[in-house]
Image (tube, rainbow, N blue to C red):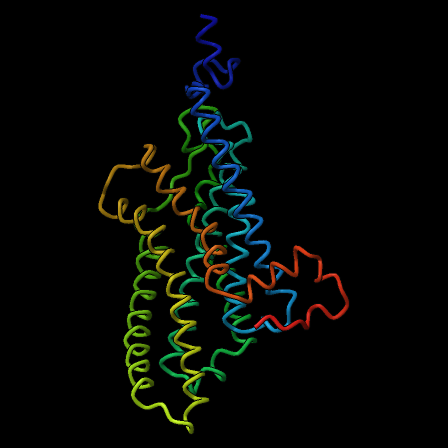
Length: 322
């Protein structure tokens, strides 16, 4: 009888308490170590992106403000979601029903904000490549700031609406004390949070790819002194589209497996496969700044300035990074 009580999350609650999950010490240490390192890297790398774009005036462009929005969501995924998931793994939930519902809501807000930021990146490249003459007037810094604010507001409203039942009926969905679960309208989340955004991204980038290829061919066959400046500008836009295309591709690779499994009716909830796919989604937040470091010289120069504390010098915000 004593051994049975030791297996309960809340021994005093007897039959209403969940049983403590069983795990091997070596497995637990390995998982906690990996998740802790991933959380630290995600938080630190995205903080560098945030400081870089926010501090250096040269980086205050429409495209970079969208990257800033993406970095903010990724930063909080590393700061909040990773540690909480690490805490929840093979453990009893002891923080109460309200914090449980709040955790799921915040996680969805951040994932939704990341998804919408990817959509905005696709829109930005679509306008820049397909309608270059209108880019400066349509994608202004003011309009982008307003759009990003609206997107974050929508993400918050969407997430609270989706988990409204979890807040209005705290603890309704758990089967015992020590469990943290939330019920969500799967069909609505799949359509609004995955299918529609992914379709927009794929359609826009397919169009961007076709136009970029045709422009590259035209530049190779019609390069003259008179058009040299225009050619350089087009090459820059095409390179930016390629770099951001890699960002979008990695996003699709990380997010699609989980949603496709759910969409296909696979029963993965509560399984080890769900855990792996969920952390693959979160790992995207760590990969994004690594992609910046690989493809963007300005990010590498900005990191050097931050690490060497040059940003503390007067006038550092006006340093030229590109």
